[in-house]
Every structure is written in C-alpha cells, then in structure tokens.
Length: 596
Image (tube, rainbow, N blue to C red; front, side, top):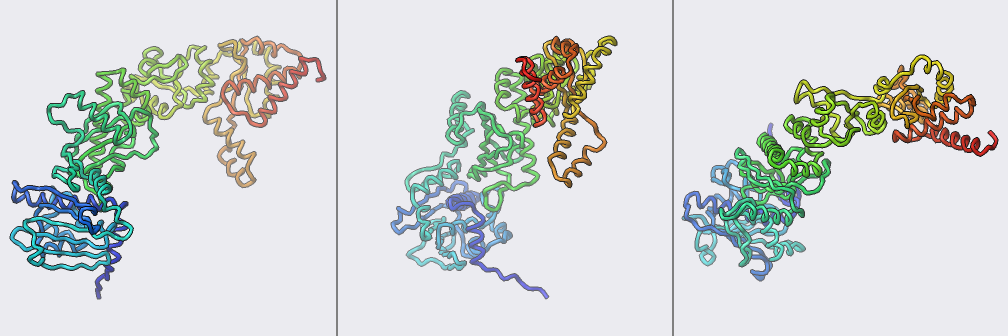
C-alpha cells in the first residue's frame, strides 16, 4: 500500500523564505526578476511592446506598502494557480512558457522570498484578452484568488505586486533601502527600472563601450570602477570571454600580494541581473591574484540564486578563464618584459603554483623569475647558460649551510627552498630533455671537499679522536677536510633526511615510554648523524690540531661546533647551549689565568 506525503505548507513557506535565502535584500531582486521575465515573455509575441518596471517604495503609498508594477505579459486565472500557488513542480511552468532559456527565473519560488519582509503579498495581474485577477498570499500558507471587480480592473496588460510589511521589517521597504538594493542588483538590466522617479538602470556593463570611447578612456573608467567595487586600482585589466557559456567580463589584477589560501570572491551577473558579489570557484585555484566581474547567460544558478551550480559547464568555464589568464601572462612576456617582471615581483606565488603543472608557465618562470643562488640572483635560464647543471638545495636551511662553501669550491647552487621552487627546478627536464638538474644535499657536499694527503691525515688523527669523543654525546660525526674559504673553521652539515632522524631521536628523549617506542620504530636501523667538518686550511683549526693541551683542545672543539651551528642557522638544543657555556667560560678562565 502506498501513501502520499503530508506537507505542512506553512513550514514549506518558512523553509524557503527564511532558510533558502541569505538576506532579506533578495526580495527586491526576485521582484525585478519576475517583472523582467514578464516583459520578455510579452515581447516574444509583440516585439514592439513597451516595457518598464516601476517600484513605489513605502513612502509613496502612504499605507506602508511597497508596489512593483510592470508592463509585462500578465497572467490568467489558471496561470496564477500554476505559477503563484504551486511549489516544486516545473512541468506546468515549462508549458506556460516561463522556464525558457531567455528568462532570468528558473525555479518559480522567487516570490516566496518576499515573505522575508512581508506577511501578505497581493498580486493584481491581467493577460491579453483576460480579466484582471487578484491573488493574495499569506505567510501561513493560505492564499485567496478572485477576478477583480470592475472598479479595480486594470487598464492594460501587466502585473502589480504589493507587499504588506511584517512588523519590524518595514525599513526594507523604504525608499533609500530599495534604491540601494535595486541599484546593486539591477543596474545592468536592459529594461528601465524606476524607484519612484529615479532611474536606477544604466543598461551598459562596465566592460562595454559606446564605440566612441578610446582605449585609454576605457581603461581609466574600468580603473575607477575597480576602485569603487573592490577598493583597489588594478595593476592591469584583462578582458574575458567564454562564448560557450555566453560569458563576458573583465578581470582586475591585484596591485598587491594576495594570500593563496585566502577566500577569493567575484561579482557575477546572470543575464545582466547581479547573482552575487561573493561567487567563489569561478577561476582556477591558482588565479588568486585577480578579481572578476562577469555576466553569463548559460551558467546555472543554485535555487537561491546566490551561487553557481557545479557542473561540467562551470568546469569548462573555469578552464577557459584560466587559459585566458595564461595567455595574458604569455603576451606580457613577449610585449613588455619589464611589466611582467613587475607583476612577478607581486604575484610570483600564483604563477609558480600554475607552473608546477603547466609547461607554458614553467617556461615563463624559467625565463623571467630570478631565483636566489650562491652566485647572486639569476633566472634558471641564466643559471643553466653559465653553469650547465642546475644544482639546487630543497630547503633554505641547507642553502644557508652550503652556499658560501659551495661557492668557494666553484659549485653554483640554486636556493629552491621557497614555496614551489624545488618542484619547478625538478620539472625543468620536462621543458627540454637535455636540461640536467641535481639535488645538492649537505651530505653530498662533504664528498666534494678535498681529502687530506696521507701525512696530514696521519697528523690529525689524535685531534680527530678527541673531537669525536667530545662530540659523540651530542650525536655529531666529525670529519677533517681541506676547503675554501680558509676563513671558515668548521662547517655543520645537516640534510633533510638526517634532520628527520635527529628530530625523532629528540622526540624519543622527551616522550613517555609508549610514544618513545612508537617513534623508535621510525628511526630503527638508521644511524644518520649530522656532520661537523673541520677545515684543515683554517689557521685556528691547525692550531687546535697542533695543541698538546687536551683540555684546551676540547674547549676549542666545543666552541667551534656551536659557532658552526650558528653560522648554519641551526637551533641550539639544551645540550648545545651547555657546550657553548662550557667552552666560553673555560676559554675565558684560561685566558685570564684562573683555575682550570
């Protein structure tokens, strides 16, 4: 046995009018939308029909009500039943011709938004060849319908909607509020809209021109528009067009850096009616450096008409708009390299995020974005031309450790420790198979340093034994090599993998027994240790090697170790701080001739 659902009409009205829409402001938009659709429907059969919308705010009538009049097609009694009193059924709306492509409305529930501000909605409407019909809807779900008496018969086709304000919501129906809301939503509508005697429609989109406007004048006008709407003078203005979605508009490039993780919202119009000023995901995620104003005829809105429906067409639009932004960047690189460099100084993060997956943008970054290297700022293309192999460090700390020593050995290194840089350097062979890239880790540099000759190696063994015994408790491996610059006494080398093992061991020391055993499983079987490489060419190191005072040598080893940590921008652990204090105080005492 089957049963029918029991629907609480009052609950449905409350749900739609109070929970579907974000703000009572939308009631003006929905009333204008219905009026525009009615005029569009009339002109389909009578192209020469006049069309205008007049909104009379609460002050006009004197009784606190608001009236919206249109010269549209009007409704018959049967159509009023189907369109104003049926919720959730679209088939009859389609049959009656009010769900066609050229109409703004697609859902037939817009009138219910008026219950956000009104307890009662009155509709007086007349279709061609039919009498005037009066419909009254109440917030509790009831409605009344009758043919108007002769004294209230309309003179011609059209519809008048009257709102009786709800207590406490009458301010939404007053002149200043209605002008502000109607101007926000309907300024671009092709149909004249008046609030009282004030015309609020301009009929032109910001990106359109009358044909006599010069490019410079258009740019100045769009700049002023961006300052008014978004609060900034754009770095540049990019025209947008996606014919498949009937989309046209402009993108304003931000003149200041933008946070890639911040919310990016755009102003979107649907058939020249403002959909929302807060539409997200119109552009690809990497395009966080622009704000758009667009009008579309094909993209689908959600039921509340405050967002775009996610579908294949929106995906296609997003991709097409991304292609347009890529094309602008490429053209800028060809026509105005200085301006492109100025753009990259502000928005390099967005471009690099795109270049991680896009070869065309990778070429742009390769040619124009200067990377930090130990040979000075260079683009990747300049670096390859000078040094051949692109050697890079994947972290800023490793670059700081290696930069000076690598430069002294004539090893050029790129600092790829900033966001996306290591991925971009690793992707260079995708542009050209002949490009060679190589990650230079701290442990790799030790193998490139010059080993000692046999006699020197034999001479440093006592020192090396003492140094290893001194630093073993600090978990450091000690080497002696000869390298430039000779002014650097010791080099602390710690690559990413070793740093992870060191952190795990430190965590084991600080954690309880359970967590210590868990962390131990990750470090099990690994004996990775940071390296301290003493420079045999440094006079102070040579002095320490030759010293016969074991205590003095120990203090020197501890001091040089901590100095190497500080030069490598490494944090000091409590044990390192203790070694620093012991070395400093011990050497100070020896220098002053005090007790050992």
